[in-house]
Length: 209
View (cartoon, rainbow, N blue to C red):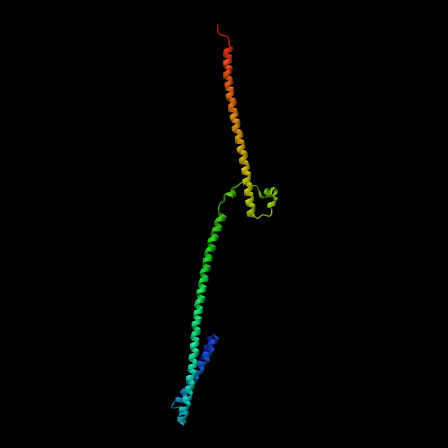
């Protein structure tokens, strides 16, 4: 029952020869002990034959012990190899676990950065861009563009329109300055004309009596 229990526990098939050899060696030991028992029936009936039989069983026991030691040695070597393989596998698992942790931290960092970018109050959101429908009506070539490309196109359009407006403003400013300069010149001419007229009136006026 004990041997069966051990076999039920041991799952490695490579250890079964060790268990079988161990059981066989144990049986051989019990057989030899029975032959060496001075109170036994075989020893008391024929002592000389019992000694010869015990010698044969002892040699067979030594052979079984040698075989058992060899199997045990092989099992120990296999256990060492298994421990080495297990240690290497554990190191690889630890390395992969650390790499996974690093990837997790990097993912969490990138997720935070993405959330910060998405919640950032971008200035372009406050631009008075023309509605998308109106923009696509004017520029139908952008109807298949994605949201990002469409936003860039709308911003570029707004920039171009502002540059045109700024250029028109500069032109109007130049015209305004030119008109102001012309108006000032006319004012100066009128002032000079008033002075000339006053002098003319003074000359043409009759002398007092």
